[in-house]
Image 1 (cartoon, one colour):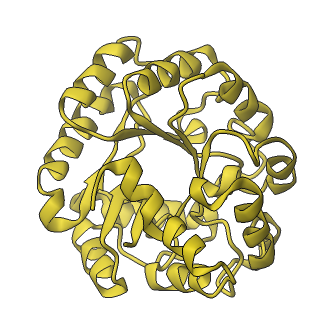
Image 2 (cartoon, one colour; image 1 turned 45 degrees about the vertical axis):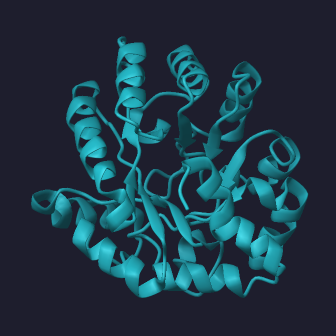
Length: 278
């Protein structure tokens, strides 16, 4: 079982413009066009069983369209292998109503991106909606650490992650980018071993890493040490597609030196249990 817990697509009419803008800001390489059909072809070619789309709600009014589309995509997930999380903005005062609707529509989780939503992760608005989402059984996948397109912006660095973890008792939280992109010393000191999931998306150094940000990725041997310190049962495979190639990202994990048991857990078994798929 191979499940990519962390992917992004855009509506066909917007995909080219969105990808080019993000690519320019981050000086990154896109491996796919950002269109859903392209991702489906990529996942089939790479041998993935499922991918999870993570929409980002950058304005409160966007949530209705984003969440309606997520529910529609999930209706055919058994055939397509494509699942979608929903989205919510910290300024959505009716967050309980939105979360309840997502639960009734059988959406598995939500994605939060403090940098794009311009809100510190330990803001009370995040704390209350994350707490309620977890209470209702939703997974909450959060961009953690810095963002390659916004150097130095610290909305989701570890000093803001820790208060969230301390405040939310019912843990269904996934921290993207191995707990905090570009913050790995702090992750090692303050996050590893805590009751939280980490995803691998866009965090392990490979030959494709832009030279001006190579220090913000971890080498493979450190990744392996993180997996074993935190527990392979709490690590989820993700690519951040279209910003990593799905074949390339899979190969990095498979060649990392993890045991077969660890690989099975990380690459799919853990996510399958969380998502309720087989």
